[in-house]
Image (cartoon, helix red, strand yellow):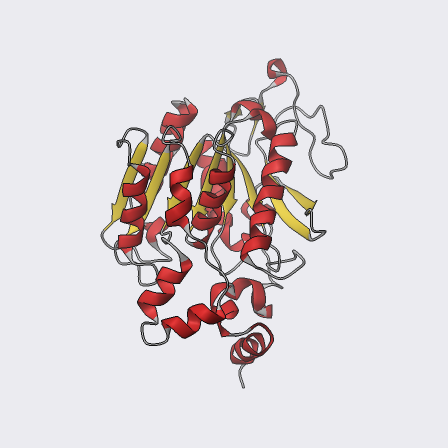
Length: 323
Protein backbone atom coordinates (compact mmCIF):
# COMPACT_ATOMS: atom_id res chain seq x y z
CA UNK A 1 0.00 0.00 0.00
CA UNK A 2 1.42 3.41 -0.94
CA UNK A 3 2.28 5.92 1.79
CA UNK A 4 -0.48 8.33 0.70
CA UNK A 5 -3.12 5.60 0.55
CA UNK A 6 -2.00 4.30 3.95
CA UNK A 7 -2.27 7.83 5.33
CA UNK A 8 -5.83 8.18 4.01
CA UNK A 9 -6.94 4.81 5.38
CA UNK A 10 -5.33 5.51 8.76
CA UNK A 11 -7.01 8.90 8.93
CA UNK A 12 -10.44 7.51 8.07
CA UNK A 13 -10.09 4.80 10.70
CA UNK A 14 -8.98 7.28 13.38
CA UNK A 15 -11.07 10.35 12.51
CA UNK A 16 -13.93 9.06 10.38
CA UNK A 17 -14.65 9.79 6.68
CA UNK A 18 -16.43 13.12 7.25
CA UNK A 19 -13.65 14.65 9.35
CA UNK A 20 -11.00 13.37 6.94
CA UNK A 21 -12.82 15.08 4.07
CA UNK A 22 -13.33 18.28 6.07
CA UNK A 23 -9.81 18.67 7.45
CA UNK A 24 -7.46 16.61 5.27
CA UNK A 25 -4.48 18.82 6.05
CA UNK A 26 -5.11 18.48 9.77
CA UNK A 27 -5.56 14.73 10.05
CA UNK A 28 -3.26 13.28 7.39
CA UNK A 29 0.24 12.88 8.77
CA UNK A 30 2.12 13.56 5.54
CA UNK A 31 0.78 17.12 5.39
CA UNK A 32 1.76 17.83 8.99
CA UNK A 33 5.44 17.05 8.88
CA UNK A 34 6.66 19.23 6.01
CA UNK A 35 6.26 22.95 6.66
CA UNK A 36 8.33 25.39 4.60
CA UNK A 37 9.68 28.40 6.49
CA UNK A 38 9.53 32.03 5.22
CA UNK A 39 13.32 32.41 5.05
CA UNK A 40 13.23 30.13 2.01
CA UNK A 41 11.35 33.00 0.32
CA UNK A 42 13.76 35.59 1.75
CA UNK A 43 11.10 36.82 4.15
CA UNK A 44 12.05 37.89 7.70
CA UNK A 45 9.84 36.21 10.26
CA UNK A 46 9.16 35.10 13.80
CA UNK A 47 7.93 31.64 14.62
CA UNK A 48 5.19 32.58 17.08
CA UNK A 49 3.88 30.11 19.63
CA UNK A 50 0.33 30.73 20.80
CA UNK A 51 -1.60 28.99 23.56
CA UNK A 52 -5.37 28.98 23.27
CA UNK A 53 -7.92 29.30 26.07
CA UNK A 54 -8.42 25.52 25.92
CA UNK A 55 -4.66 24.99 26.30
CA UNK A 56 -3.76 23.99 22.74
CA UNK A 57 -0.36 25.15 21.48
CA UNK A 58 -0.41 26.69 18.01
CA UNK A 59 2.29 27.99 15.70
CA UNK A 60 2.20 30.95 13.35
CA UNK A 61 4.50 32.97 11.12
CA UNK A 62 4.66 36.68 11.87
CA UNK A 63 6.18 38.49 8.89
CA UNK A 64 6.50 42.15 9.77
CA UNK A 65 7.93 44.95 7.65
CA UNK A 66 11.44 45.67 8.90
CA UNK A 67 12.52 48.95 10.41
CA UNK A 68 15.09 50.14 12.93
CA UNK A 69 15.34 47.62 15.75
CA UNK A 70 14.27 49.22 19.01
CA UNK A 71 11.76 47.19 21.00
CA UNK A 72 11.21 43.46 21.34
CA UNK A 73 7.73 42.07 21.93
CA UNK A 74 7.91 40.58 25.46
CA UNK A 75 8.45 36.83 25.52
CA UNK A 76 9.09 36.50 21.78
CA UNK A 77 12.17 35.47 19.85
CA UNK A 78 13.03 37.17 16.62
CA UNK A 79 13.48 40.70 15.25
CA UNK A 80 12.82 43.79 17.29
CA UNK A 81 10.42 46.47 16.11
CA UNK A 82 10.31 50.21 15.73
CA UNK A 83 8.32 52.25 18.23
CA UNK A 84 8.82 55.73 16.81
CA UNK A 85 7.68 56.79 13.30
CA UNK A 86 10.65 59.18 13.16
CA UNK A 87 13.00 56.20 13.15
CA UNK A 88 11.15 54.33 10.45
CA UNK A 89 13.35 53.81 7.41
CA UNK A 90 15.31 50.78 6.31
CA UNK A 91 16.08 49.13 2.97
CA UNK A 92 15.16 45.61 1.96
CA UNK A 93 17.17 43.34 -0.33
CA UNK A 94 16.11 45.39 -3.36
CA UNK A 95 17.16 48.71 -1.73
CA UNK A 96 13.59 49.91 -1.44
CA UNK A 97 12.77 52.23 1.45
CA UNK A 98 10.29 50.84 3.98
CA UNK A 99 8.01 52.87 6.21
CA UNK A 100 7.17 52.38 9.86
CA UNK A 101 5.57 48.89 9.97
CA UNK A 102 2.86 50.35 12.18
CA UNK A 103 1.76 52.40 9.17
CA UNK A 104 1.48 49.34 6.94
CA UNK A 105 -1.71 47.24 6.74
CA UNK A 106 -1.62 43.81 8.34
CA UNK A 107 -3.05 40.72 6.63
CA UNK A 108 -4.27 37.90 8.86
CA UNK A 109 -4.05 34.95 6.46
CA UNK A 110 -6.41 32.03 7.09
CA UNK A 111 -5.63 29.09 4.82
CA UNK A 112 -7.78 26.37 3.33
CA UNK A 113 -8.48 22.92 4.75
CA UNK A 114 -5.58 21.16 3.07
CA UNK A 115 -1.86 21.76 3.36
CA UNK A 116 -0.32 24.10 5.90
CA UNK A 117 1.02 27.64 6.26
CA UNK A 118 4.24 26.75 4.48
CA UNK A 119 2.23 26.07 1.33
CA UNK A 120 0.81 29.62 1.49
CA UNK A 121 4.11 31.47 1.56
CA UNK A 122 3.76 32.55 -2.12
CA UNK A 123 0.69 34.50 -0.96
CA UNK A 124 2.66 35.99 1.92
CA UNK A 125 5.42 36.95 -0.49
CA UNK A 126 3.01 38.94 -2.66
CA UNK A 127 1.47 40.73 0.32
CA UNK A 128 4.85 41.46 1.92
CA UNK A 129 7.08 42.23 -1.03
CA UNK A 130 4.66 43.73 -3.54
CA UNK A 131 2.24 45.53 -1.21
CA UNK A 132 4.49 46.16 1.81
CA UNK A 133 1.95 44.55 4.14
CA UNK A 134 2.66 42.86 7.42
CA UNK A 135 1.49 39.24 7.25
CA UNK A 136 0.40 36.85 10.00
CA UNK A 137 -0.14 33.23 8.95
CA UNK A 138 -2.01 31.11 11.48
CA UNK A 139 -1.59 27.34 11.63
CA UNK A 140 -4.84 25.78 12.85
CA UNK A 141 -4.81 23.12 15.54
CA UNK A 142 -3.81 19.76 14.12
CA UNK A 143 -2.14 21.40 11.10
CA UNK A 144 1.60 21.64 10.59
CA UNK A 145 3.35 21.76 13.96
CA UNK A 146 0.28 23.01 15.87
CA UNK A 147 -1.05 20.62 18.48
CA UNK A 148 -4.57 19.24 18.88
CA UNK A 149 -7.21 17.99 16.46
CA UNK A 150 -9.17 20.26 14.13
CA UNK A 151 -12.84 21.00 14.73
CA UNK A 152 -15.17 23.91 14.05
CA UNK A 153 -15.25 25.06 17.67
CA UNK A 154 -11.51 24.57 18.03
CA UNK A 155 -10.53 26.48 14.89
CA UNK A 156 -12.83 29.32 15.91
CA UNK A 157 -10.80 29.52 19.13
CA UNK A 158 -7.58 29.42 17.10
CA UNK A 159 -8.65 32.38 14.96
CA UNK A 160 -9.71 34.28 18.07
CA UNK A 161 -6.33 33.60 19.68
CA UNK A 162 -4.47 34.93 16.62
CA UNK A 163 -6.75 37.98 16.52
CA UNK A 164 -6.09 38.82 20.17
CA UNK A 165 -2.34 38.35 19.64
CA UNK A 166 -2.38 40.80 16.74
CA UNK A 167 -4.44 43.35 18.65
CA UNK A 168 -2.06 43.23 21.64
CA UNK A 169 1.11 43.37 19.54
CA UNK A 170 3.13 46.63 19.86
CA UNK A 171 3.39 46.93 16.08
CA UNK A 172 0.54 44.99 14.52
CA UNK A 173 -1.94 46.30 17.06
CA UNK A 174 -1.55 49.78 15.57
CA UNK A 175 -2.22 48.73 11.98
CA UNK A 176 -5.29 48.35 9.79
CA UNK A 177 -6.32 44.69 9.81
CA UNK A 178 -7.30 42.90 6.61
CA UNK A 179 -8.56 39.34 7.15
CA UNK A 180 -7.95 37.10 4.12
CA UNK A 181 -9.53 33.65 3.87
CA UNK A 182 -9.13 31.20 1.02
CA UNK A 183 -11.72 28.43 0.55
CA UNK A 184 -12.36 26.97 4.01
CA UNK A 185 -10.30 29.84 5.41
CA UNK A 186 -12.96 32.21 4.11
CA UNK A 187 -15.45 30.55 6.45
CA UNK A 188 -13.03 31.06 9.34
CA UNK A 189 -12.57 34.70 8.29
CA UNK A 190 -16.32 35.36 8.08
CA UNK A 191 -16.87 33.79 11.49
CA UNK A 192 -14.11 35.93 13.02
CA UNK A 193 -15.36 39.14 11.40
CA UNK A 194 -18.90 38.41 12.61
CA UNK A 195 -17.59 38.21 16.19
CA UNK A 196 -15.53 41.40 15.88
CA UNK A 197 -17.59 43.66 13.61
CA UNK A 198 -15.96 46.88 14.78
CA UNK A 199 -12.35 45.72 14.98
CA UNK A 200 -11.64 44.37 11.49
CA UNK A 201 -10.97 46.90 8.74
CA UNK A 202 -11.60 44.74 5.67
CA UNK A 203 -12.43 41.19 4.62
CA UNK A 204 -11.21 39.20 1.59
CA UNK A 205 -12.72 35.81 0.68
CA UNK A 206 -11.65 33.54 -2.18
CA UNK A 207 -13.66 30.52 -3.41
CA UNK A 208 -15.60 30.21 -0.15
CA UNK A 209 -18.84 28.29 0.43
CA UNK A 210 -22.26 29.17 1.85
CA UNK A 211 -22.00 26.34 4.36
CA UNK A 212 -20.09 23.11 4.58
CA UNK A 213 -23.30 21.11 4.62
CA UNK A 214 -24.51 22.71 1.40
CA UNK A 215 -21.26 21.72 -0.30
CA UNK A 216 -21.68 18.15 0.94
CA UNK A 217 -25.31 18.08 -0.19
CA UNK A 218 -24.38 19.28 -3.66
CA UNK A 219 -21.51 16.87 -4.28
CA UNK A 220 -22.70 13.82 -2.37
CA UNK A 221 -26.38 13.99 -3.31
CA UNK A 222 -27.10 10.29 -2.85
CA UNK A 223 -25.49 10.06 0.57
CA UNK A 224 -25.65 13.70 1.69
CA UNK A 225 -28.00 12.95 4.57
CA UNK A 226 -25.70 10.22 5.84
CA UNK A 227 -22.58 12.37 5.42
CA UNK A 228 -24.15 15.35 7.20
CA UNK A 229 -25.30 13.06 9.99
CA UNK A 230 -21.71 11.90 10.46
CA UNK A 231 -20.28 15.39 10.17
CA UNK A 232 -20.91 17.83 13.04
CA UNK A 233 -19.01 20.61 11.25
CA UNK A 234 -21.32 23.29 9.82
CA UNK A 235 -19.35 26.49 9.03
CA UNK A 236 -22.48 28.42 8.07
CA UNK A 237 -21.20 31.52 6.25
CA UNK A 238 -24.65 32.28 4.89
CA UNK A 239 -26.07 33.05 8.33
CA UNK A 240 -22.96 34.72 9.75
CA UNK A 241 -22.22 37.15 6.93
CA UNK A 242 -25.25 39.36 7.76
CA UNK A 243 -23.76 39.87 11.23
CA UNK A 244 -20.88 41.81 9.65
CA UNK A 245 -21.72 45.52 9.22
CA UNK A 246 -22.12 46.63 5.62
CA UNK A 247 -19.65 49.43 6.39
CA UNK A 248 -16.79 46.90 6.34
CA UNK A 249 -15.15 46.69 2.88
CA UNK A 250 -15.25 43.20 1.38
CA UNK A 251 -13.61 41.63 -1.66
CA UNK A 252 -15.00 38.41 -3.15
CA UNK A 253 -12.71 36.44 -5.50
CA UNK A 254 -14.34 33.63 -7.47
CA UNK A 255 -12.98 31.13 -9.97
CA UNK A 256 -15.82 30.19 -12.29
CA UNK A 257 -14.26 26.78 -13.01
CA UNK A 258 -14.15 25.88 -9.32
CA UNK A 259 -14.69 22.13 -9.16
CA UNK A 260 -15.01 21.91 -5.34
CA UNK A 261 -17.09 24.92 -4.28
CA UNK A 262 -19.85 25.82 -6.74
CA UNK A 263 -19.26 29.41 -7.95
CA UNK A 264 -22.91 30.12 -7.14
CA UNK A 265 -21.96 29.96 -3.46
CA UNK A 266 -19.55 32.86 -3.82
CA UNK A 267 -22.05 34.87 -5.82
CA UNK A 268 -24.67 34.37 -3.14
CA UNK A 269 -22.23 35.50 -0.42
CA UNK A 270 -21.58 38.65 -2.41
CA UNK A 271 -25.30 39.29 -2.78
CA UNK A 272 -25.78 38.91 0.97
CA UNK A 273 -22.93 41.34 1.61
CA UNK A 274 -24.59 43.82 -0.76
CA UNK A 275 -27.94 43.66 1.04
CA UNK A 276 -27.80 47.42 1.70
CA UNK A 277 -26.04 48.33 -1.53
CA UNK A 278 -22.78 47.58 -3.35
CA UNK A 279 -20.81 50.39 -1.76
CA UNK A 280 -17.57 49.07 -0.21
CA UNK A 281 -18.08 45.66 -1.85
CA UNK A 282 -15.97 44.34 -4.74
CA UNK A 283 -16.70 41.35 -6.96
CA UNK A 284 -14.00 39.72 -9.10
CA UNK A 285 -14.16 36.56 -11.21
CA UNK A 286 -11.86 34.48 -13.35
CA UNK A 287 -13.46 32.62 -16.23
CA UNK A 288 -10.76 29.93 -16.07
CA UNK A 289 -9.82 29.77 -12.39
CA UNK A 290 -10.48 26.49 -10.60
CA UNK A 291 -10.49 25.94 -6.85
CA UNK A 292 -6.72 25.84 -6.43
CA UNK A 293 -5.46 27.96 -9.31
CA UNK A 294 -7.63 31.08 -9.25
CA UNK A 295 -4.86 33.09 -7.61
CA UNK A 296 -2.65 32.40 -10.65
CA UNK A 297 -5.06 34.14 -13.02
CA UNK A 298 -3.79 37.37 -14.53
CA UNK A 299 -5.76 40.05 -12.70
CA UNK A 300 -6.19 38.30 -9.34
CA UNK A 301 -3.39 40.13 -7.59
CA UNK A 302 -4.25 43.37 -9.33
CA UNK A 303 -7.75 43.14 -7.82
CA UNK A 304 -6.33 42.37 -4.38
CA UNK A 305 -3.77 45.16 -4.66
CA UNK A 306 -6.37 47.75 -5.66
CA UNK A 307 -8.63 46.70 -2.81
CA UNK A 308 -5.87 46.85 -0.19
CA UNK A 309 -4.61 50.15 -1.58
CA UNK A 310 -8.06 51.74 -1.50
CA UNK A 311 -9.06 50.66 1.98
CA UNK A 312 -5.67 51.16 3.59
CA UNK A 313 -5.49 54.64 2.08
CA UNK A 314 -2.08 53.95 0.56
CA UNK A 315 -1.52 54.86 -3.08
CA UNK A 316 2.02 53.45 -2.93
CA UNK A 317 0.58 49.92 -2.94
CA UNK A 318 -0.86 50.59 -6.39
CA UNK A 319 2.58 51.39 -7.73
CA UNK A 320 4.31 48.51 -5.99
CA UNK A 321 2.25 45.53 -7.09
CA UNK A 322 1.74 43.66 -10.29
CA UNK A 323 -0.83 44.82 -12.81
